[in-house]
Length: 453
Image (tube, rainbow, N blue to C red; front, side, top):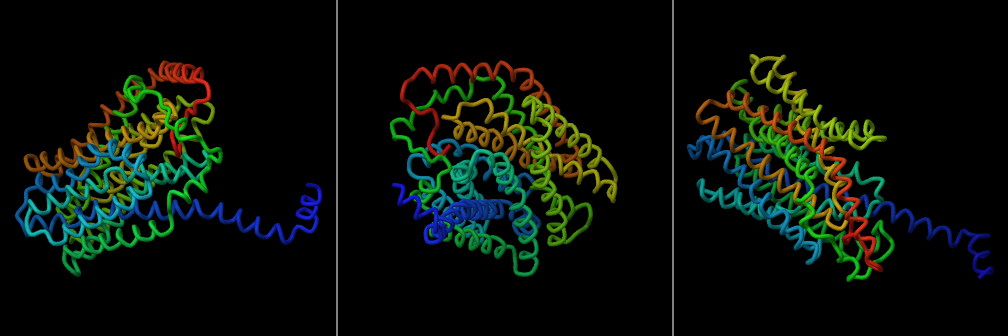
């Protein structure tokens, strides 16, 4: 034993080089997984949001009303909301890597169907399939990423992953508008589809369940029987503070979703910009939404370092700023002041997403935390991403798009109320969670964490 240790430690060079190479690989491979998963997330949202860039083309070609245009966007978010939780549970059992690859292939193939659609029903059916393919990517993708990183990085990675939706939307809207103007709107969908298929192939070649297990941040293996132990899933819905976080997060994302879907049309109709320029300008505001999610999350982490309950306060403040800026901005006359106010409002429009997600994680048992994030995605999709663009589309048919956009920020009032109730219920929520931990600790020889969490 001594001789072996001395040989390795004294002249060290033959043993140190391989050890260093292994260490570098262990550090680099998780970032490769993150890069590929993040790339697929960009492809996900590019395929979803490219539709916004071609709204004017579809409206002209097929004579569609604003509500029908909005339905093509909302059907994706609706399917994401309905299928996120069941497909996330299925992915945990069938294999996350295989599930992610299948999802990417499905949404990319469906986007290709959008390129060849000849009327509204065909386009609606293709968009339905896009939603099915994208349904669980966010929750399963972040589970794969977090499984290979230490917990100290989880907050930053989660914030970046959530903001990736906005960055993908920027790329989808901006590039989609340019492609549509120069090559036709069908090519906008076709090139998004090809991008997704290429990344799916790269992901499948580089990532496997075996490699995820080998590079897992949690090095202590757990027997399958122990890893499967969970507290009841019902606990996700019996804690009032968690319910407030679900609702508050969904309602604050309502207006952010409106901005993602309708800003290209807003600039086309009221600033007389061509579709490619409208998409490019709108992409700046969409980028502000994503940047705000990251920066607001960092601000929240710093402010709440010694008191976790301050996350509720920052979420409320971000909602209030977005409400004031967007309400005044859309009511102001067209010009630089309006653009400035809308820009500031867009920056804070999704800023409460990070704090709300942190509260969900902080108030739910580790064994059901993946399901908790699936439930959060469900709430965000149904009450925010699906409902927001559709409601504004219906209002635009009756009141005009400008008036509809003036009304959209009022949902922040409901979000603020939900978050304020959540802050009040937070201490009791922590006591409920402590009771679950105490009850679980009396079960001998059983693991508490779900797989890959």
